[in-house]
Amino acid sequence: MHRNNAIIGGVIVNLVTPRYTPAGILIAEFKVNHSSSQVEAGHLRKIEFELEAIAMAEIAQTIIGIGSGSHVELTGFITKRNRLSNQLVFHVSGAKVI
Image 1 (cartoon, rainbow, N blue to C red):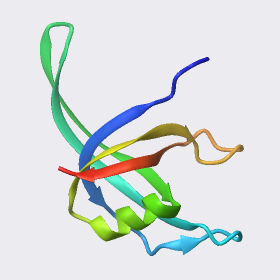
Image 2: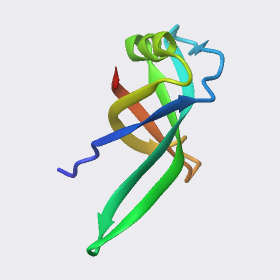
Image 3: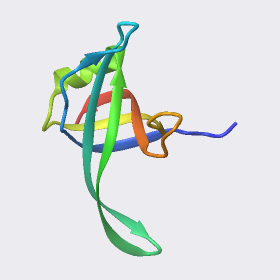
């Protein structure tokens, strides 16, 4: 079995108005702005990126409660936006304020 687990720290930005699926599941879509320094090949490298993210159900409610501008540590997995897209999205399964 292959693993697809990720932990990302950053700031919640661009939290859009929550919506519901046709089945009534709450959806929170947002971006995570990440900035850090990482060692690669023995050299310090500055890392900055913005990652599209989505949270569903109780985790969506948590993200909405935390709100934009908050520093968070998110856990989850990465998958395609939909079956016809190659754009990747981080699906959040856990969140805590840091």
